[in-house]
Image (cartoon, rainbow, N blue to C red; front, top):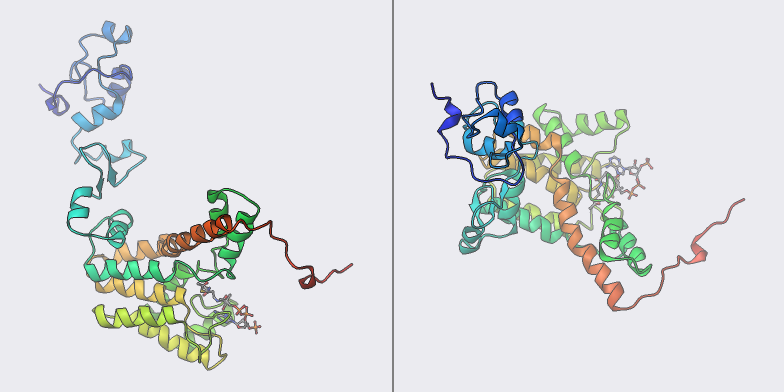
Length: 328
Ligand SMILES: CC(=O)SCCNC(=O)CCNC(=O)[C@H](O)C(C)(C)COP(=O)(O)OP(=O)(O)OC[C@H]1O[C@@H](n2cnc3c(N)ncnc32)[C@H](O)[C@@H]1OP(=O)(O)O
């Protein structure tokens, strides 16, 4: 009787050796003749005409087989094996012909699906608005100091990126996590904020060094305007605004910051677009996809700061000693 594995085309000549022995041990129902090896003596002679394990799996094992995916520890959605690369199955030519943008590419590569245009436009606005915030913020400062030490582009870039974290640009995921949990549990802003205070945790997405209740962050306003105009629902964002109203009653610097705006609005995108199951939303929030938006965006600005320092041939940075309090 024919094994189901023997239905594929005959193996091509391969350079990576005969794996008959390993294939037959991985798949006990496969005989060496199924995969084109005529005898063990050929196998023992190290005949190189027979399929490699990946070749065998691709060509002989049905992709519906429960065994299939376990043999691919690197599972990717960018295919480079055909005539042109594909992102999550969408060929590059189609991406270009349809006039898609970087938001669409992110939706294909990160979320593995084509999202509606208002979603990909929102992603693009996040990236544009977070690309730079001047030279004085943590990331740009580090990058500038490194570039002025005449380090290369990659070193300058990563020295800035490494400052992204809970206090600077890296609070988007936590903002999404905490706002989602509080909203889904029906907590009032008072219960949420005071509960966080009892736990000794600052509310992620709230607070700014410079911005105040009477000097709002323009980026937040722009994101809110776009979402209110284009999203089917902004319930998480409205909840974050209610939290902000409460925190502003405590201190004038406790505004909804750009991390909090992106975090809450991305929850609205995930929940309102109808493109994600509840389980997928929970997984995205748990894994933490959203800080990636800030990392990607700010890389644009940090690269610009590196080029500025090199073009202007800036000398080695030395911090003014007047700032330093020398103690014993
Ligand atoms: C692009 C961006 O980087 S946006 C910022 C992303 N980060 C966050 O959202 C994390 C949460 N926020 C924070 O940690 C802060 O608000 C920061 C780091 C953003 C700004 O902090 P600063 O302006 O330096 O405020 P500072 O640390 O001096 O705090 C002032 C007071 O406000 C309180 N406070 C500040 N932020 C919060 C917050 N998110 N929740 C509750 N209380 C807060 C502090 O406890 C402090 O009060 P205390 O002195 O009685 O303890």
